[in-house]
Image 1: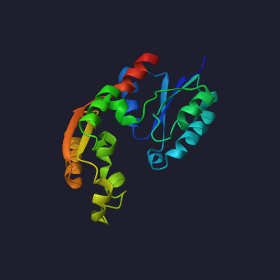
Image 2: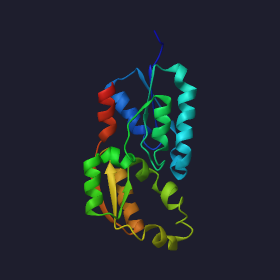
Image 3: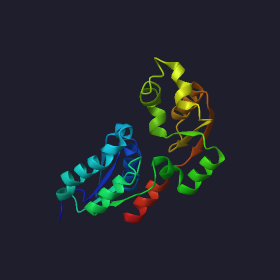
Image 4: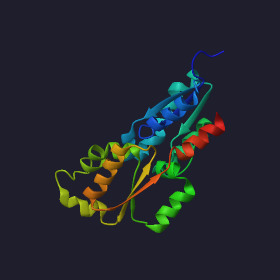
Length: 197
């Protein structure tokens, strides 16, 4: 009998807080969450290799490994690694689809193709990851280069948090975008884990 958790959940640093919340709320002591750095989204070609390295490093320590990481710009590279390693993944294009649900996400994009999305994580770290990350603090004129095709900022809220709502609204104002909030909860992450628990 293995001591400690028997199932490893590998996720993105941008969704780790939500995955940990699901595990803790359900009392799943047999599951452990470990994340890959959120900034890999800036280098999606590195995501498959990072996932493979984590799988190799942890395979002996766990009976089961699940990857709660969507494609996120890897062009199928992540799924190829999961297939080669015999590891199950959550699938999907990106976390926005996972939080909103595929049908709801498609509806949002169909209604306004120029939608820029925030999750709780991105609302919390908007200044560092988006505003300063894109150099808008030093060169506000770049706003039109980066966001000229966007019309709306859609905040996919995982929690009812007035501070995060205020941050998301402020982000929309700074980017000069229409604001919309949709409460998603944990979406497909909860559904996926309920199905494998």
